[in-house]
Length: 118
Figure (cartoon, helix red, strand yellow):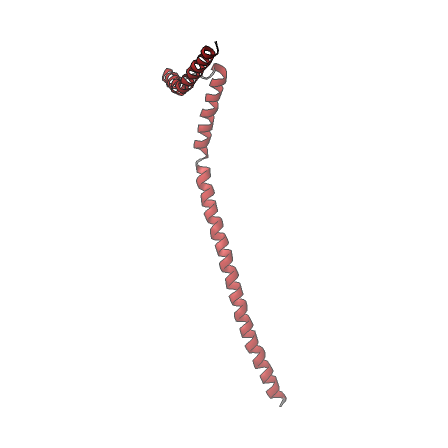
């Protein structure tokens, strides 16, 4: 009877061990897959970082160019092309036409009021 009980206990333990090992194997495989996903994300991020870093020389060159232009403007003042000045003048004239007409209308109304009072 003792041998039979031992066999039953050993078989149950062995079966539990196999089930536990199987569950542990599944847990480990899940963790490995999760880690691989994180590693793949890090690799993709490193690729993106590489693309950004490869563009740094062009960014630096443009920055130097803009800085030189700012330096020229501070030394010599802002210089506009004659075409730009003419375009600004035309835009201001268009904007001011309405204001000028309104001021003339107000002046005429004021004169009419003065005429009626006297």
